[in-house]
Image (cartoon, rainbow, N blue to C red):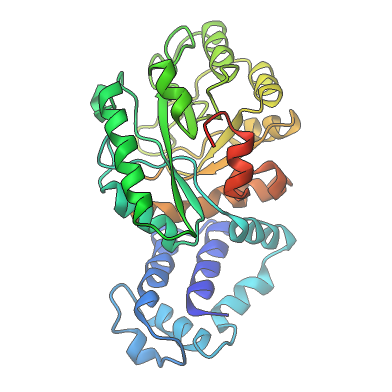
Length: 333
């Protein structure tokens, strides 16, 4: 047991129990901070001097630094059931994230900062999926800007060690007729394409179903992003209406993964549709849709949801090796 592992596990179990996101974040923040510590025992007073570490997390760090299971974690584990353990095992098995944004579109950080944050979490790969041209409010990438970004990603990878690779990708708007908002030749050159609806979310079920079916059957599409478009915080936004059985059956047949979007305001798809997609035999991508480095921590909530409906790592492409992901996907190898 290391301090980082103990703090991450506590954060997961708190989230599993429905704790406040602020409380969960405190343990992730402390886990980030302990990277500055050398190996070996650390007393609580010294740990408390780290930025973002408070009295409770300092005690956890101190106890875990000796190799022991911290008392706080031991209590949470004793109270948790086998489903929680399964969820943690899935989170530990995570190898990557198929959906993150940089300051090239509506993210707040440079590409290399997002890549470094994913690597620091232990990911072997992550996919840069900035927005496509039509989403002008998010500064979507024109074909020329996307070509420039491909060169920027190659530059980042040239300076990254062999244990991590930033993959090329896009979050591509699904247009009204189900076609994709980017040049075909560019889509074929990307490692991973996430396709999402961002407009006319309150369309009638018939047109929305046809739109989604066309998109998920497109051979360039690897992941169907936040499929209902709902927002569950603030003023909120209702779910888009569509024939879920037809769409998820098409996803399963095409090998298009359904995204388990981990953003707290989305948690998309809802529980009933998540179970329906699982029953249809779909693959899933547990994605953060991160727009900042600290949002990459949100992924564990998606693995918790996957565990609650009995999904195993074989159905979650974000636990796959880079080689398996690329071999199965539509992008170049």
